[in-house]
Image (cartoon, rainbow, N blue to C red; front, side, top):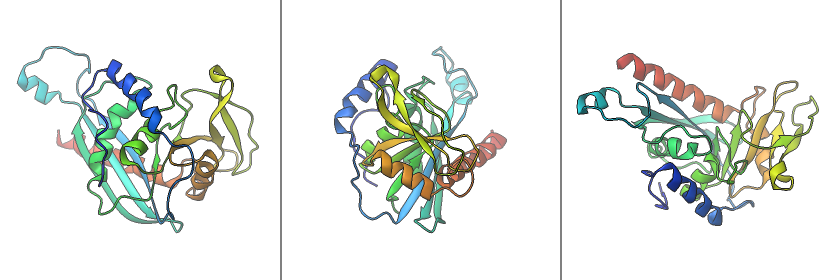
Length: 247
């Protein structure tokens, strides 16, 4: 698996902020990908056994209280959506919880899981934001740039932006706009099932917004959360349960 070494993951929050701003120059918001034959959903979970505040601890306590991140990926043949492969990985959790910087917390675990696959999927769905981010560099955009792979962010909640009312029918959507940036369209609220709450779709990398919406609906199967990220969420939760039992 090819991973661009664009920056270190062992950085301070202030350094992470600057890295996000620099990565904007590499972002592509237009369709640039070959025929999509495989798609994958990715998600992360965490085992927190100690405060993430910086404090002095003995080596024994540091080992006992080590926080960990779990990355999971589930791959499907597209458009049939038959599962092909799944993998998970557990790595030390080095970065604190800071809204807007979650990619530095999650991507190391996601990369570790992706490295276990036989082949990198053609398109990745992330349970998180892409372009719909204060610095336009959410988890999906960041990972897409690192991998130079098309990615789509599909979040369960809004980080920034407002949208209008949606029709109740499946497939309806409304632009998600950043009122602090002259109403720039940064994503879309998308109804994946009639009458349920929308999900929030945004471009990750190398995908236009219209295509991101279309492909999100194509991998949805009558449940609010599209199948790729739903199955990835299930995988990391199961991995976390097994890990906690063995602690």
